[in-house]
Length: 163
Image 1 (tube, rainbow, N blue to C red):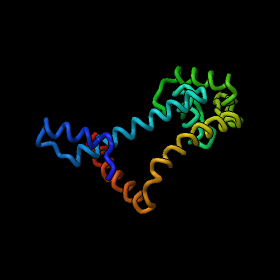
Image 2 (image 1 turned 120 degrees about the horizontal axis):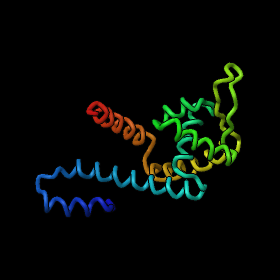
Image 3 (image 1 turned 90 degrees about the horizontal axis):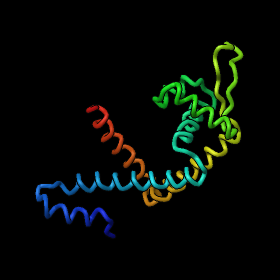
Image 4 (image 1 turned 60 degrees about the vertical axis):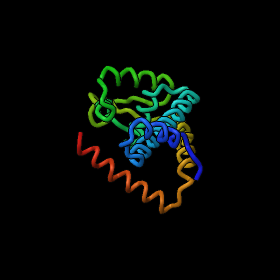
């Protein structure tokens, strides 16, 4: 089997820490490397699409709500202050990515809508990231991918229970 960067890491650290569990260290270190890789891809993609990370996160949250939400719903989803959300929405509205309107049901309420250009920009950036995810996970068979997803779920449930 071909060696990766983690194999050299394991060799180095097993000499220093003889009781190190190489399987646990291999899994954790590979997960860290994959997360860093995907983060770099996302950062490059956002720069290419001239998105600040917070702009992309806001569009992502809005799209996740079907393209319509109130500022307070987005504030809760992103765990930021109302003032920060106002600034984000101002910037996104200036770019033509969102539109704010008064609710027909309650004029005191403001609704935020994802525009077609906002959705297109968000989907384009999302697709670049998705292509890389498909590329790196494409080495797995469908069954292996399902097994990996289920295994990671079990591990994550233990991590979440400890928080």
